[in-house]
Image 1 (cartoon, rainbow over the protein chains, first blue to last red):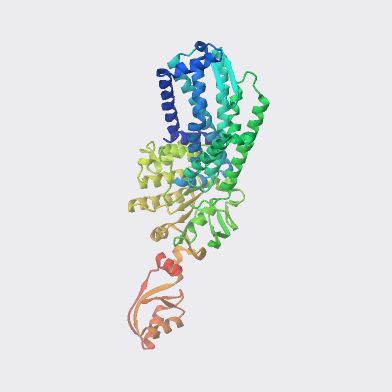
Image 2 (cartoon, rainbow over the protein chains, first blue to last red):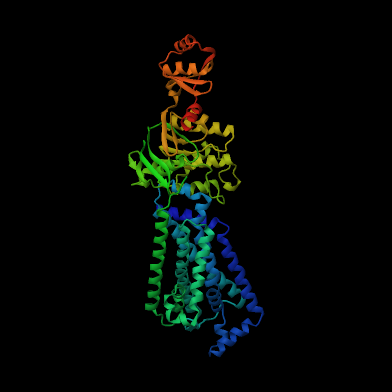
Length: 282
Length: 292
């Protein structure tokens, strides 16, 4: 109960800060831009052509669900990462920089509990943000092309291709996929959270996180790194795409999420130990 | 109520505290004085468990802060110099969030405290719109929210105007009167400490160089302003009486010395005494002597 009260306070702080909403605003703008360009240029023709070349009826699969899937896959890895790194990188380091932590640490709360509360708030933010992008993307796509239709999924890099003709089934997979993205993105937030616990500036925590993420993504794209792709964090984080396959490869997904969970725990513990050993002078 | 046992702390090679011990009794207001870097804030940090001592421990109501921090701080409220709140939240939301780290939030108790610190009309406004004085009042409200038995104040009146300082002093003295609250008060404002505290300790380069009752300052030694010639002959007489020169024109005598006998001895030794006037020894005199 006490933990929930503290978490509510932490979320109140998080969602009261204007920079928390930068991500929401940026995603809304981007979604609008994608849909406008898509609707009023030859983007629609391109998609219909792609669907029909694969032997499917574009009237069924060119839909709000397909558009939402595209928005989420393309935008989340790049733009989402920036905002998760920004918010999680701030959560401890910014409070320390601003002096708020002194007031909190003068209270009878252990440092472990304090970090658990903050980490939980970051995880909630990450998850809700992914769902916000999904829901807002869907609403805009539905406004642009109508709510009916199936789901067309094509992700060549992870070798996933699937179609769902029924709206209900497609929506279920989309919701499952969004859950998977949310869980994956918590690893990125955990990395930024760890840096935030160090004695560094909030901006440094964000930059370090993004540097690691982008190096991981860049190296993964070199052909001669292909045999080692399963060692890359971002490759493991992409495992949610398999949730769209007709026969979901649960073993592969559980393996990747177990590894990511281990990483999250490691990042948290390193952050905690660094935080635990620090002196906070009044 | 508050016990500090042989605290030692170094930051790198720089010693911050060297074997500092003192006790503060229930209902007592204890002042901690010293230059910047003397170790006052480090002492407070150790009491709050924010700084880990290299040796020694702090106990609050018998519970070790270093071993059972949460339990030890359950009845402690603290205020820091220039407290930093969440600027983008209202004063009320700040109180609610900070209080959640101590236990359940009692809205009625919070409203009563907010009224007492004089923030009732502005508690719903964002903290970024508060003046320095209002922030200090909010800091006081958040410190009082867990209904503490011990209050730790680190330079709480820094930057306040004279009315604000007086209000703060009267408020703290009222709390002690009402609730028997124990207060550790760390300040540069010697006049404030003198008016508020029962006892003081002076820290110098991490060591405690003085501890005593404020009311006993005048009794510890007798201080006189003098105008005598020749000075070296007068110093001989003063030292023979157990006293000494504090500064040119200012001398001290032990509490049991008879000033008139000393004047007679000086005159007898051929010293011309143009002026010999007792001076009340202030905390400032003591502080300057101890830290010089």
